[in-house]
Image 1: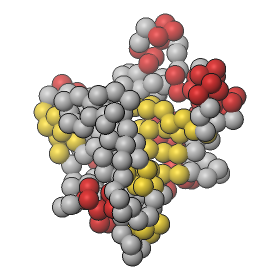
Image 2 (image 1 turned 135 degrees about the horizontal axis):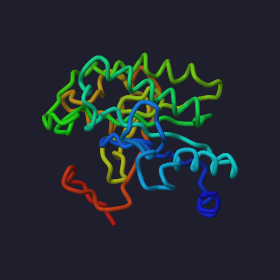
Image 3 (image 1 turned 90 degrees about the vertical axis):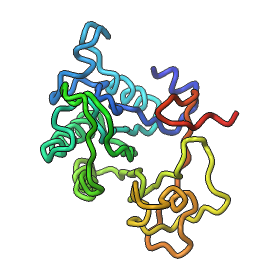
Length: 221
């Protein structure tokens, strides 16, 4: 792992520790749906630890992506899920930090397994209570922590996963104007606001493979 990080000359690695399917790449104490119940290293593996240690060895910043949507959890869309999510976030920062950057996906529910319910779960715009989640994350380490999400607070999504930003791309932004599901939010976060209240630069991301049926975007090269 260290050789890979070194040979690629990365300045930062952000690991997808858990995506929407809820499978955790570390042996989380809060779920059985994790690497500890996989064949990897006979259940003794911990990919988050492997990557974080490789980054430390090579002097590379280590960040984590932790999807808020959980298509496996029986308590998703219920109040108790927020405590569960914060417990896992605390687990990651405490055990594998310092963390340079947090990526909070804007996924807001949909069809999932949900403990066997096999249904669609919808949530309100304020369900995740991001302000308190971000405050918790910052309180867990002394090092500076950059937070990425749809509307920041530090870096915002650019509105697509094709690897491009708008010709006009202002860094200022009114955070409340670019929350997911607000009318026209993708156009707003793609262009920014010349007279926005907060300094929230955009970050462009792109998949290294064709994106499947859930999203229609394709790699432009």
